[in-house]
Amino acid sequence: MFDLAQPNDEPGQCVKCRGTGRYEWGASVNGKMTHGGKCYSCRGTGKQDRRQISRNHAYNRHKIASLT
Image (cartoon, rainbow, N blue to C red):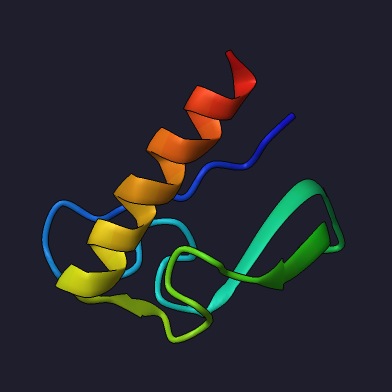
């Protein structure tokens, strides 16, 4: 499985990490997710600007092309 970047529609709070700067996934155990790490969609800042949105679109196009 590949985790594609999740670009925002407009600059602002990162939709992937909800502004925390950390992307977490997996089962919730005692209110905490079992896996997590720095959000690469916003580079850990919690916000995406136009440059990061453009970078995420380019990354997704490259990743999808490499899978086919």
